[in-house]
Length: 305
Ligand code: CP
Image (cartoon, rainbow, N blue to C red; front, side, top):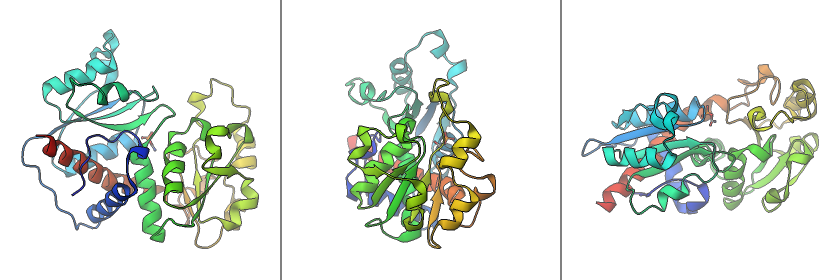
């Protein structure tokens, strides 16, 4: 049975651990996995950036596993009085919380916590700024694995706001490790040196007919400091999935997007739930892969005792 101390970055997982989490997520999805807690177990979801999918699918996963979920809202907590993130986690640890799922705008916020000798709480990263989003990566991998049954040789294009996307970073690292051929598309100025080891920048129209997976990304207006050089309409026409581009995809290709979606920007409104779209499936798979992550982290805590 897989056990993890924390899950903060996808790169910390071995390929075997990734595959074990995907297989376990699929078992949870197909009602073929059982899990029972041997003692009361508390989890706190600490979201310092807004979230619908990550926050609520962790909560559903936690409740399905029988965990006690602690409610936390940063804006009604002592964070407003200057409490640091470390002190919030120290408090949760002192209260007997077993697992903290954290989303925070600071890249690598978790390093201080996992390196602290005073803390024993397990940390699951629900997204750190433009750093990592390991649970999103795992649910994306689960969706691709469910569709194709393998990763080796799949042609996958990550298209859009790669600069600001933690989803792009986690996915490019693990997809290339698993043998997929990764490409990047979207405004060329958003492609920088950090992507070169993982895949080349391509024109979406040129690569579309060859793709197995088109992974669209949200334009993260909130991280652009008002500097976005494209109107929504021009972005959609130049880089988005229009009806014309959809027709160029091969019959077996799928479309993904971590959501939330800017409709008619990254993807035409009518295509969000189109036949090739797996966007809703990604959200559903999030619950099951997060059950597998939580289970592995709880196994890790049992080992420590
Ligand atoms: N995909 C994702 O992280 O969505 P939320 O911001 O709604 O959690």
